[in-house]
Length: 197
Image (cartoon, rainbow, N blue to C red):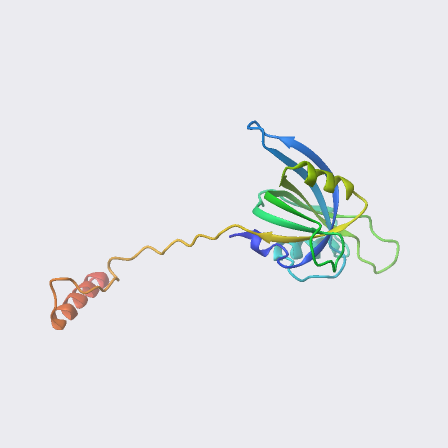
């Protein structure tokens, strides 16, 4: 399943950059390892994937003992992130090409003093952004505590595999059988063999 297509599609989410590190791999390619926190207490459920919604409901529940939930094996591939400085701005301030987003966890903050108020819950993850000095400096300028908004787009192409044909159930007129009665007899013969009678 491609979870990237279900990750807040066409929805701007407020985020906070918690960390940003410029890295180089062995081939000399740069990437920016960016720790991101997405607060979930705004009541906006549009585009929220079910795995995020279920974990949020559990951590925000009164009497929940757990303070975090980790999604160890979850990884989103081939994402594009449009960064907006405001919730209503039309043009993105920056566009990031993100080959991988992983290390997802849900974190619950301290319980509020106000009775009946829900604890703050945030989704935290790491985005590996294709590196450029311009992208890194933009992220560094918008470092915590200043929030901005991200719009996630999955660019991974789904490849549909054709279902394998069942030779016993494929009813194709054979080339040397132009006669309809002969074809019907072949079909009956195949069905009888398939049923075992």
